[in-house]
Image (tube, rainbow, N blue to C red; front, side):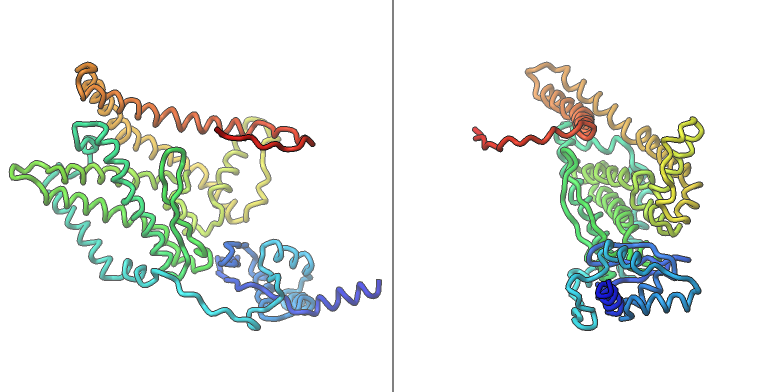
Length: 419
């Protein structure tokens, strides 16, 4: 027993080796994070101060004494250290940062990020938007409308033109997020994935919580700023490629079709319940760390209590006090995103769908001997597939999640050939 006590005392006298950590004050709390591993924790100011002293080389026992003398309270240093280990803040190799300093790695595209958001670049973006406003005032046919989607008589051409035409524009939107992060020295990156049959681009803002709050807004809003510029540029292209009689050229019609899709994506960002770019702007401005989950949980708890089902109520202590405080009034507010969804449906999606179906039906009236018949028929098959297949896949995914795992047997595994 005496040897174990001596061992524990010896360990508590040894300096703990930490990874490089960031300390970002957020009101009465501090967001402490290990940027390279995307591991963060929200600590009270005194807890962050204790951790900072330990990262500077103060052994645990001395750090506990320092905390007691500074704040007049005792701290369970063993439990505190266990939490730090779970967060991955403690180095496994035992080497402290000042013993083995790592030179800062160069962040690719950082100069391009600075250029993309320089004062000169912002002036150019503003000029493009102002140019579109002037053109739209004189030519109201530039104003977005659902009919712009149908830039060609063939619905198949429209379908695949919109699908493949959007890809570089979505890539550009996400690319602006990446550049805004690289500008801050973050290793933000863009990846290509899919959701069911749809190709999607995803941006990972690695280390964004490790920078000051005021610097996070641009990475969140940069994609929407890109959409405004792209929308304006496409409108100007359509206006400046008119034919001699003032009608839109094929290039202009394609530009207006893509501009309408950009506008729909921009409006989609206002559906805050989907945790869009604007949601993160609001959460940052309100100094919340998990506002969506906290507010929706509080809202559901309120409903379950009103329905007399307290057993369905979840523990609210898993969120910070401030998240709960804001979530009490923010929960009903995010439900307004449903209103935005309805407006997008009524003003955008529904008119496009109705005109699409009308065009397809009109094309199929010519009979199977007409090429337009097959164009309309295949277009309708694709339209139905858009609604049916995602719903089917989502239902199958839910059924798999609810189904119990098959029992594990002791039978040997066999290898089957695939023909």
